Image (cartoon, rainbow, N blue to C red; front, side, top):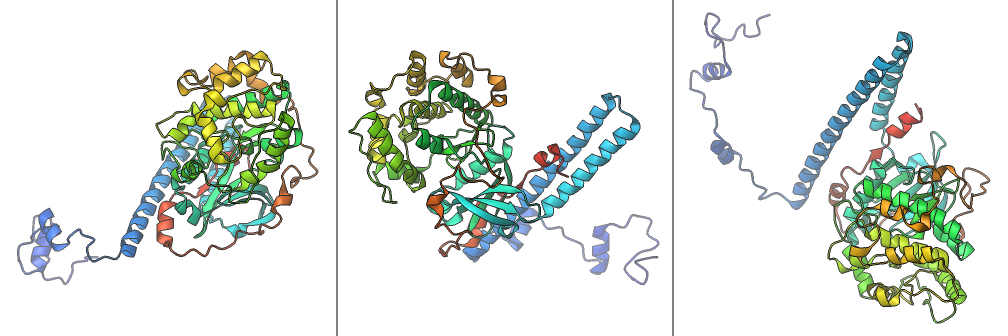
Length: 501
């Protein structure tokens, strides 16, 4: 069919190829066609936001970022799918399996990839998870034990209020936490399965670790023996090493963030203050400490004028309220973080030394009546680090603590990383490669997959079963969406590895 039939401007007898320019010239009665130059385009369509409202500019910026992120992720995942196919084909070429078996494996990969593409298109929301119980509370949200309504699987769901993330200048840290959990495939880090958001909240769907945390164990047992402490500190060394290998610094390692799985082994959690070269400091958090703001939850002062047993009892009485408060506890934070003069991964090893001190003595080395006094002691740590006379430690244990609670340039782990710490005499006899295979000192006795008896849930009975609505409207939804572009995540490699499809 001749699409130009009946068009008097089309020259059927022309021996020359019919170009766009000649067609436009004919159509405009042979007026020469003028292609606009860049300067003409600028004059006709000026690239200026003048006259546009801020809301329009914000929506345009958000749309641009979302499109860029969408196609960036789509391209990366297409490359990954091709790489998985190539890897499998290369493996099959060197195997001695039958052609039928190789075909079945390729077909299986194809089905999993199709399932993954459907999973990507599925939009998750709060309605896809039913709350079983609230098991944790923090300054910016809660942690709930939830059940996915379609599969019945049990997870821990961490919720974060977007408004607070803006108000407290936590945006970089929220992104860092999500990135750490998404990038990690380590047995020492809590596993992230999904992340999503709505206009008011961010949601992290993670594995549920039913053994509680190290803080609860310390409150229960007061102190650990050196053998038990050696086990937990060795696992902490491996967990911190895993984070450092990803290029991140945790910056908030404390007993609250060391969780225990069903077998009693540890995993690190709560990367809300971690950094992966996004933003190096949380100014709002530390400013409250420098100003000596008291615990807004009304916690009683920690009086440290008694014996070691009295100190332990007073510390236990106030410890959990400090964990729930917006101020938190700075007891495990390295002094160089407060100084804001630059620091590296060695700051996490200071935290390990402070935790080890608490495991053996019963309270952190610099705890005081209020966070501001604790900060003062940490900054003056050379004069404040004291071992009580009624607590007897081995020479190796005290030496390790003193070499971790030290100046950054002399701190163990600064030059050789975790290997320096592993070679310390305190860890003599530890089989690092197999430590997760041996029995833990305390194995949780669980009654069901939803057993929360190792969590202090009696303190959380007043927390609503679903995240309460936020009534802050002084910040546009477009701004919030813009800040959290790319937050959504679904884990595929875990599902493939576990043959979940």
